[in-house]
Image 1 (cartoon, rainbow, N blue to C red):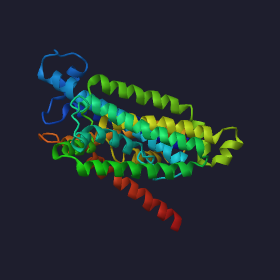
Image 2: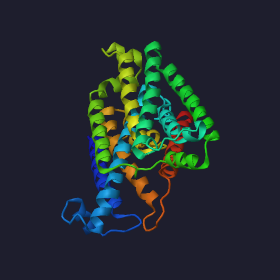
Image 3: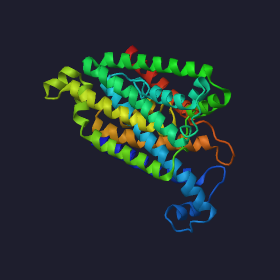
Image 4: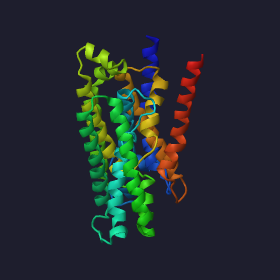
Length: 343
């Protein structure tokens, strides 16, 4: 009973923190806006022509919504992959899907220098999103093909990691032969950003995140069973291989969508599930899934706010901030597990 009350307090606290950080992301930046102006612009109480309305609706709102959606998508992916592979260090990058997105973008941005092609249309923001999504789906298709031939999920994990290395090697070759301008554009994409979406794109991404969460709710019991091993899951009526394939497909789509619109975002998918477990002291997915969703959204908004450097005209790369926040979480998890084993 006390445990349930504690979880309710954490859930309420995360919801309140999410709301506060969301509004803070709308008000803080190179131009600081008063809270009253932010709320009036957000709820349509101010005219569409004034400065506050333009800043909030055209720039900061899609950025904040994209941060929430990406935080949810990557965090859910990390939770599912850590359960499937029973590996605390499994995350969105382990299957090579993020690397596939990078390859798609590299082919668009760097192929002009390497092969002498001129692709001005493909180099648009929309072309980059499409290329990243197709590259990620290409690697996902290979992973699904492998999983249809191999029943051992650990083998699928190893092959996914190897595919990631192969794709990264191809990208490195393209970078070596590319021109400085194209290489600069690719490096900027690789630093990650939540500011590359329009209002419509950001809300479509958020809809996908919520739809994915609803779908995962139907897999709560199978995920709980898989924590205890494939034999146990099979003994209580689940089909482990079929469930694993479906969840790999689902998480692959999550990672592809998040990476395509924002670039590769480090550590969110890896660190947030551990943060949720430490806050809620449970491994039950009926609690962990909503906890991970809220924690991912909160952490993404926090990192985006830090990256803005409120009051300054420059912004930090979002990958630098997520790494600074996420890496200590992973180190703490490793040290905690080591401490438990030595006790």
